[in-house]
Length: 75
Length: 343
Image (cartoon, rainbow over all chains, first blue to last red; front, top):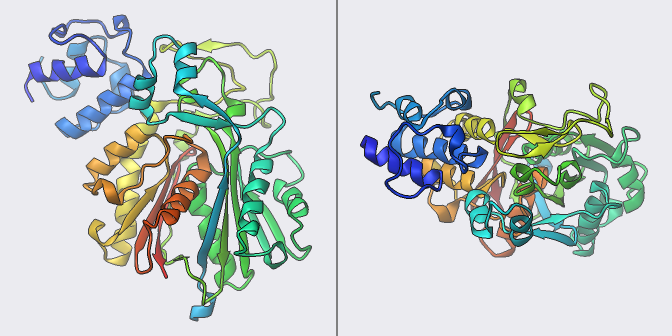
């Protein structure tokens, strides 16, 4: 998966319009980034990236790019 | 051990309370949601909810009454009742004793409550097998019943979307001529109490008294609850599920020298259809061999496996010669899995 594809997956998870995520978006400003979206994101990471994330790791992320790093993408 | 004292799951009946909460009703209360979105994230379209004066024991009695009406056993034959609930009528007496009287079970009948949720069905079957195969009982009535709705805060969509009320009655016998699911085992269990705070009703027991004036907390997703309400950390529960469910399935299979392909049907705890679908793909089990059946009843705790199994039996999905795996997991954390062989 490329970083662009990762952002696209995030857009789907957070119900954001396609092509709108660049990485610097603050997670706490995204309305649909709720407890269900976190579970959907964990599912996507496990299934498509083979990364099993812990909720505490996700909670420590401030912006979308932090999630990308957590999933193995280079900053 | 002789064939005559092998425990057999002979019959299941279930009961759901009359009132329902639909996705339309939830979406009306939580405008940020649509019915389609609710279905997408939890796989539930409606949940049955007990009336204000209806207890879990009432649902259990209704399920047992259906079981007796089916003619598979009479109350007089029951010599042990196990009642699995997290919503007892009282702190004391034991709700199973109240149920013994209401169902007209014999006075020589043993009766016990066990407090487990999502793993309770597997644990209860394990206890019933022990009772039967150690010749302490011949006809075990295993009841699972819960009214989680009574713990829900109406402003907490994280749990209102999925948790529901219901009960099931399962008959287990030592009858060698019975048809049904032989409790072949192994029974594999697991516990990790470090997860206790991730699915909990904090107040109401001895540790923290029920407080009618408990302050309302609002979480990052806008859900409201007090200490008297159920709290579920969905992300932690999902992470726990990914860690432990594949592992416990693997332990059961290894103990028998089997592979996933040797199991004809998997009936997991119906926690959340989204999570179950993820597990089904992760475990590479074909969807037709992995039961997800909760759209019209939600997550009823310890009854979900019984309800899904009962429905699978009713639609002819389980036949003699088939091997069925049951997997319970959740609140505690507690988990367990076992194999049934249909005869």
